[in-house]
Image 1 (spheres, one colour):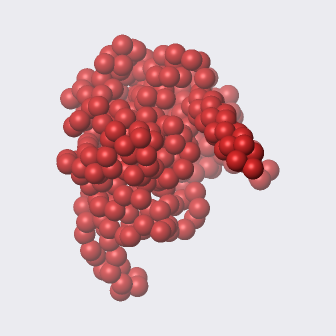
Image 2: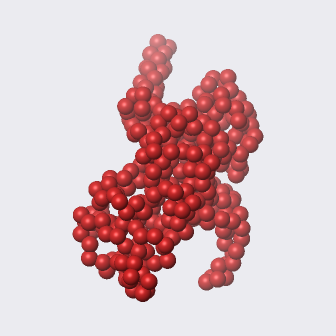
Image 3: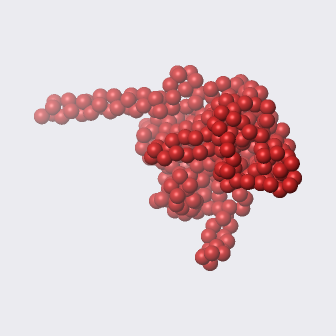
Length: 358
């Protein structure tokens, strides 16, 4: 990987407010870097999680603590006008309630000392064709599930890269028993995960052995209580916390959280899990500030490498945030303001030139 070109390309992603193209970067550098050189850079090799870790490792080592948090989640960015391939394909977007054509990326972030550092990513590629049993139509499928990739990202972060942490956070998609057991037994870490209201639980070990399970929504529990429960088929107890919240439309929602550390209190569970929201901020920033979907790249490799670059550009913004105490959107706004001032100055030159000629 050419680190000089990576730095230039990611600076371009941060500075740009429009489509990001190799030709656009060539023009922005007054031709000192040709568009062919940028295209070649994006085409030469696959940029992977291993590359990302090499770039962020020194910062992780500087800020990591035993109380660190690893957050994993995926996001979908629609690319309706891009040709379909194994990377740009159809995914069900739960936030929209429909299937969209775009990219689905699973990311792992490390949260420590007010920094949010990307430490791994996995684009979901649908490389296999299967027949839908309900419709009889052919459809694309990934060779491995997102839960498989979830455990891969955790294994690499905790066991291979030995990142110090205490907690693993994710959303309800990743709260199956397999993931819980993997975190608790294999990684020897603790998790705080949301569960669906229909999960079956027992209120005591005796009820568990007698098969007396009920839906979690049927349990009477106050918001200020952490209740020890036994999830069906999970070999260890967890603490259950219930939170009631108001949605944007005014409706009331209920969140059930389970924690594998049965020694902590309700406030700790809530305080820690609130940090999961940081990954939503990450998703918003790579989409709005570092051009995740703004490149018209055509091949799977160049698309993957552009997405990688967008994530690395986010990391560079995070470093700037720590130095300036400005968030990513404020930094981007400052860059835009400077660009607007330069554009106005250039416009006034043209106007003065027109007046002089007249």
